[in-house]
Amino acid sequence: MGFIVAVSAFIIPLIIFYVVVDGIIHQTDVYDVFVEGAKDGMKTVVSILPTLIGLMMAVGILRASGFLAWISAKIGILTDLFGIPSQMIPLIIVRMFSSSAATGLSLDLFREYGTDSYIGLITSIMMSCTETIFYTMSVYFLAAKVRKTRWTLAGALVSTAAGIAASVFLARLMS
Amino acid sequence: MRQKIYAYIEDEFSIFHDFMWKWSSMLNYLWAAMIVIGIVYGAFTGNMTAVSDGALDSAKEAVTLCITMLGVMSLWTGLMEIANRSGLIDKCTKAILPLMQWLFPGVPKDHDAMQHITTNVIANFLGLGWAATPAGLRAMKALSELNVENSRASTDMCTFLVINISSIQLIPVNIIAYRSQYGSVNPTAIVAPAILATTVSTLAAIVFCKIMAGKSA
Image 1 (spheres, chains in turn cyan, red):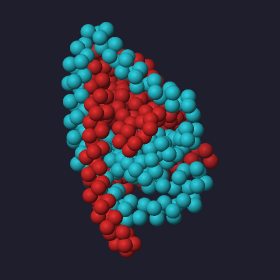
Image 2 (cartoon, each protein chain N blue to C red):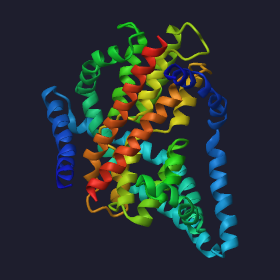
Image 3 (cartoon, chains in turn yellow, brown):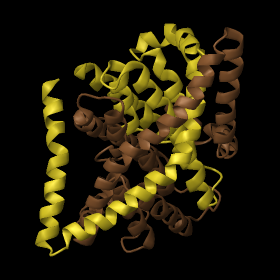
Image 4 (cartoon, rainbow over the protein chains, first blue to last red):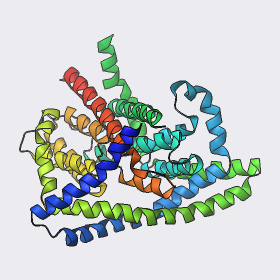
């Protein structure tokens, strides 16, 4: 789908343009402020490095042992029906529990199958349109001291399923 | 039949909730399980050399990945700091207020909860996770002040969390960094599809919440 890719190419430059021009109009010291804000980004990245090392190591072990390939082959018979590659199933499950573990698995998929393959595209889009259901729910409801969460989980699952379906559909258009 | 399904979603689903609390410390088990399964499986299939290399290479790879991310992430947070100082983010927050009032009819217009909710949504939308979480927690606390039944989530709480989990993100900054690190020909090609997909998941969330809120009101 050349059109989607063409639109994608415009979005980031337009945001940069808009933010910088708007900053100048409102008399912000755009360059100084940018440099200051960029430091926050560096701190964020440095603080996630230990997490990333831990999880990429665990996924690396799982991949090298042949276990991921074995389990994907086992569940492949079921998932082929939905057009979801079986290699994605571990990622879809882990995504609901842990954002960083899901990142580790995504990176493994990128390395194994390439970022622009069908699997790579679904991974990219799916990771952008889903959230960690159980982690978010437990942290937020814990803060509000709520135990009976009613239809939150059901709603979260519905929206995640919609996101995954959209990812598969869009990835198919693109590849 | 319909009523039964609604009742099921409303109540029977709550058997999952007790598990959920245990899952908040899930990552420790998940991590340990990945390592144990990997090493045991590798030992039985004779892949121990590969496992050993895999562990070391992955750790090394995490560092090179972070170097790519340093660039992309800093670019984005720098840009967002400009938007913050110039008042652009405040403007966005005001712009979505009517939408938020429609989504959260139980929250008075000038209540603290409304302000925290909009801050959280905008921060998530702009990929500012570090700003989103504190605002989200404050929103939940303010919502629980409005809640009559203390241990049972209010409709607004459910809506807030479902929409939060539906992921509303303009630019998937991390994914772009990962894609460029792993040799994508066009790392930003997924920006428009990601926006479309995130719109679909958020719309599904809104429709679901409105239906459930209507039934339980």
